[in-house]
Amino acid sequence: MQIKQNLSNFKQEVALAKFLHGRNNYYEKAVWRLLLRQYWKENGPYIFSYDANDNATVKSLLTFGKIMDKFAMRIIPMHQVLALKDDSNTIPLCYKSAIVTIRIWLRKT
Image 1 (cartoon, rainbow, N blue to C red):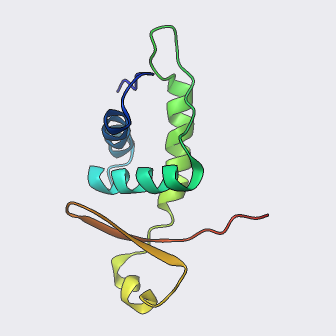
Image 2: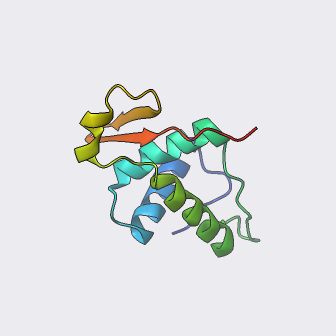
Image 3: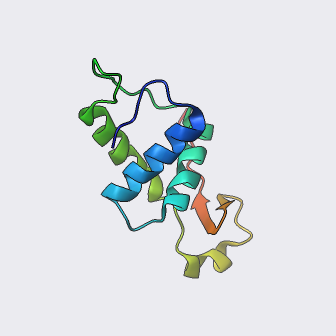
């Protein structure tokens, strides 16, 4: 998987979702796209390191993959969502056929 330096946001999202799905296929690509969007909304874009050919380095991709695996731990299993429907510490996300609910992690100040 090649993540080029000058990809548009859309193409980078699609490429990263494919990359994340390839290394952890427990979630669909659409779910990874939801998580990527939420990650970017909360943290801003991840800054990759690039090689001489403008491809993201393997080390930076693996580091980002670990970050997103940890971020994915916020997904609430579907059988628990109804019990938490009035909980203000959850966010429902949807994209095409993917619907997930994640926990809000408060930042330490």
